[in-house]
Image (tube, rainbow, N blue to C red; front, top):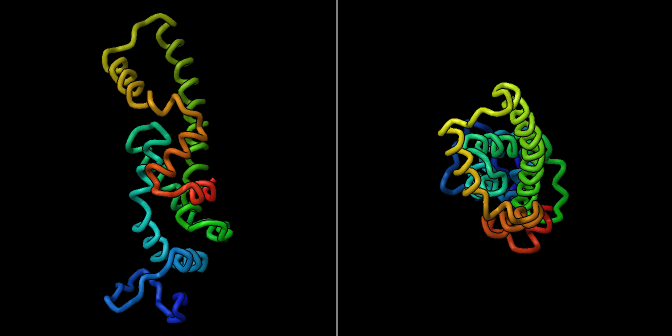
Length: 178
């Protein structure tokens, strides 16, 4: 159970169905409920914010759709694991975006290493001079076109564009997420 901002106690159990007369809990109350193990509170936070966080991650990470889904899940797992990390310096939404930024940053670092290793492996497998297949060449072209606009920006600016343009945060909310 958690206490709503009006002082009313609202049960938060996975089987509890919301009733029309039950008040909508604030993000802060849901995060507090997460800290005591209420999985339904995490589900509510996910329902409220997953779409905008997904769009943000899709633009920021420049990766395949199924990888973005994984990054989204990792983001909300981190929300579940560390609700005590919220310091009330901004909105919970900004805090979640901050987690998404760190998840994407970690992923991108690993992806650069993986791509470099795969290129080295391809050189060894091809003998260093074989031509790429049409499918690989087409995929590279599509990825280049897709990421062209974002790759001209620094990582920090991609984050800012994502938070403000895709995340719907203002300058203060974007700063708090960082």
